[in-house]
Image (cartoon, rainbow, N blue to C red; front, side, top):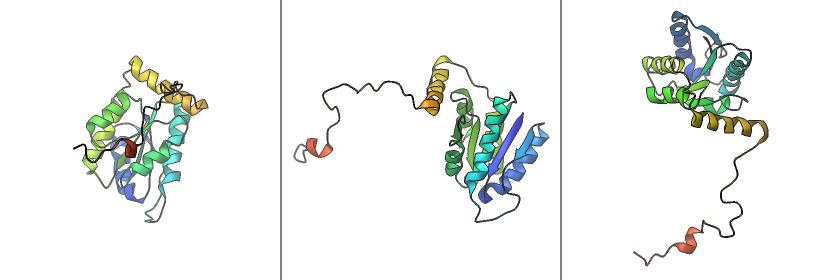
Length: 180
């Protein structure tokens, strides 16, 4: 499988170790991150390029996934999710790595390099790669809804639309400090 990596300075050491780890397992690894340590570099372009490459490969029929790394993984996940067709999940344990694939058919995961040991991060990545999408109808339906929104902003009908009565009230109107 082809694995695209993106990181900034915070995940650079992990990225190098992960490249060796994945290559030893027979994966083709493509690095979209920095070529040298720069404590002032910015993650968005690195992570977006990795995410774009995953989408391009998948559209071409190439089996590919992505891994983005940073200090917390939060910004990196947000950056990857800006790419049309990417479903990036923040992963912090084995279960979230597995569920990202099984339920969400995630094609990119994000890991906080400052939050985990290398062995933990490698185990999350290994589980992510090894876990297939379940294909269950409810999960496929939800992914389809996300894809529809990406394409044209379509959402399911609002169940509250058309109700003449506002079901939410201003908390200041309903709060009675004497009620006990």
